[in-house]
Length: 123
Image (cartoon, rainbow, N blue to C red):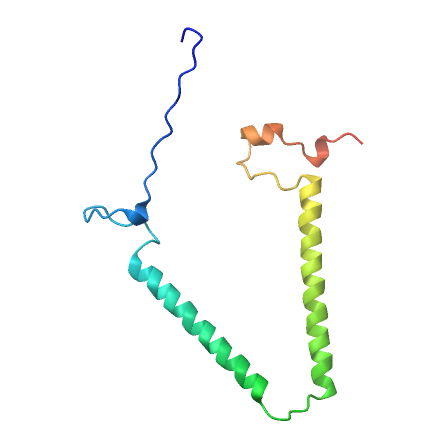
């Protein structure tokens, strides 16, 4: 080494989507027909959602009963309650150290050895 630094070459990466070698199969999930099929299905779903929204907006005079507003308010409130509750659990779990990676019983990974668990903390 003689105290000199040598430039290390980065490994060359190949974009598999741009290769044209017919002998090499495409990696899973990158076949052109599958990509176009997914795009087509999503565009059809977007179009149907647009048609449904337009039909709902141009519908004539429709009176919504009180029960409809109550059901909508309960649905919105319940959805917000579930969303806020789950986010609170995510933050609580992260703060308390319960998000350590799973390991087999009796074996500890390098990450586990450096991660502090709630039982290891001093009170």
